[in-house]
Length: 348
Length: 214
Image (tube, rainbow over all chains, first blue to last red; front, side, top):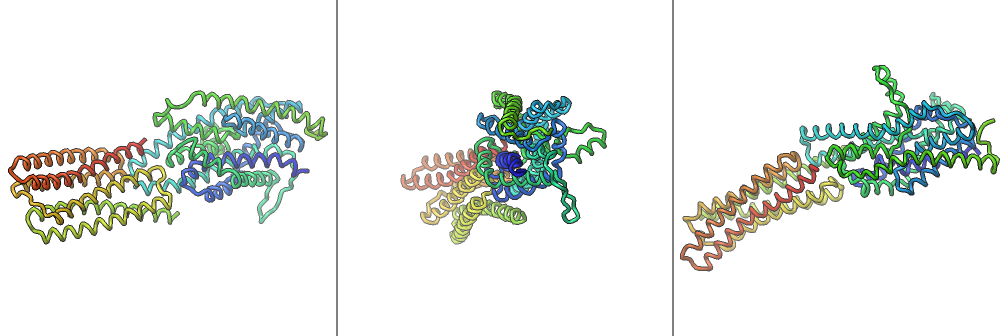
């Protein structure tokens, strides 16, 4: 039964792999700078590493928002988040899994009568609004640095091409690691308090129950990358963004840094040690970070006038609509699960 | 990854060699014309043979570069422009070779007192080609310098047009057979065409540079 309930989280992971891996390797694969097999192999390994090694931070934040106390509840929360993402995707708005999961958790809180910590909620919403802005600022800085470097080094066009290919693979690896670290909380976070996995002792290493869950989620993301991300990657690379390979490098690096900033417990410690305020560990949207980075590059290249404000408005509307829809759907589904299917969704 | 960088260095060397061949072709053309005008026909034929060999080598190199670019999907964002530049630069070398070959085939009766003018014409046409090659090299390494080289090429092309017009007017002012006049005009316009073709490459170059800078 555990595996059936986990299925909704694994489905969410598969969907994340199929869609969000395109943010990391889409342009590289679409422009044929990097082969799909190389991209998929690097992304799968790094997403798994990020999920297992650094997934705890964002999961803790989601846990502080609402700790789902029964397996049936966790199943419903993950399933309704997935349904909301699928529905919103059809509207053409770049929707965030993070926002759907948070909405669904709040739906569970309302259903279970558990309090929602407004401080944590404000922290999460602030991170959502800040992540595209941070990505844009980082992209602008990187664009300036890359331009300066190109002017001073006068690398041959072909040498530049080789460096860009290597760079795209490296930032893709970093991006996949950050995606795993930041977004595994969305995929498996709600199951952490309720799945009774014992700590495993493997070759002198202790693998906690949460890490086992993150590994499973990471594998689901990897499966999504291998089975369904090629189509999305070529769409991103050829139709949507039309970035040159160097701009793709800048945009993916800015996106990866942003996700990493909101996921790394180590970085949080470093910021604290130098007296700077740490960034909250919150699962943010990979797609919105990418959009922020592209906007940043567009602005600095003087193409800001071409930015369609209507599209930005739709994205902002998505920030509101996705969690509300997920929350409402989750509330209704929990009611149905409890009263129709007699499944325990809140621990007594 | 090492393979990728080695491949890129090899291709850089091939492109540099290709552009070197165009420069050498231009020098041989200038020397060949000088030999012809000074009636040193054996030396002229040696230059022509060398030029033909260079043209063949350049053709072979161009095909190798083009297929490597395609097979390994290198520089996807600039490949079309680079291939176009290399092909149109090849047409310039072809024009240089064909023009010198026609001297050998037709053995035109050039006018001795106008020989300095014809030499200036050939030198100016080849200076256009040299600026075109410098511009093409800059496209690969130093985009900001492309504009300077393109401007210089345009200047040399204008000078070539002026010299060609002066020569042709002088020829048609004289009491020569019409067939002779036409033959001389033919050689002048062929030499002038070398500069025109080089300028066409520069036009492509200017657009390609703007595209890469954007």
